[in-house]
Image (cartoon, rainbow, N blue to C red):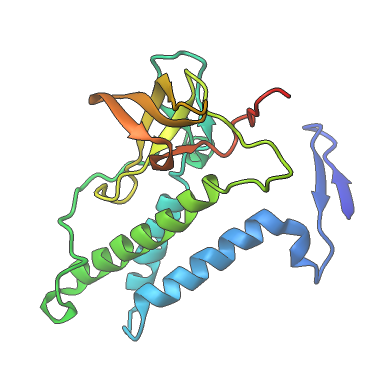
Amino acid sequence: MAEASGTRLGLHWIFHPPGGPHFNGLAEAGVKSVKSHLLRVIGDQRLTFEEVYTVLTQIEAVLNSRPLTPISSDPNDLQPLTPGHFLCLEPLNSLISEPDYTKVPLNRLDRWKLLQRMLQDFWKRWTMEYLSTLQARSKWTSPTPIPTVGDLVIVKNEQLPPLKWEMGRITQLHPGDDGVIRVVTIRTKNGLFTRPTIKICPLPANETKVPKP
């Protein structure tokens, strides 16, 4: 690993060697995911430079809107910290809520609606894959993480438009007869809801909580 240090700001940089992209595993995995979904949503469409630039900018906003960790320890705060906070000091939001074009035939869409169709297709494909990675189960040799009251989680909602994430705080656990928690009560900005644990996703930067032996 190549190292470098800043003299004035006191920064310490570590770079991976040339020809070794696998050293930057997480970022490279994100690039692979974006490229694979982008090729599928564009398909055989022929886009101009401005159209490609528009789609890529919107997809960049989608990726940088993903929740990382609670922004504060206040149990009433439902706002998560996102990559957008590091880039522009505030969450990334969509100014215009476009209708759902995913079920409209392509030959009935003008150029702008076609670009929004690509963004919506990408959003549905990528969020499904991203949320699945947050719910990855550990092997039987490792303890299974358990939800905790007060945790900030992502609530799965397939009806949300791009850049919209439904966040909630766990307020109550409902263990079964065997002691396993399969249902929780969540407080969102729209009120209290009871959801199965398969419909909630822990934030990726949360400290993993496992049952004590």
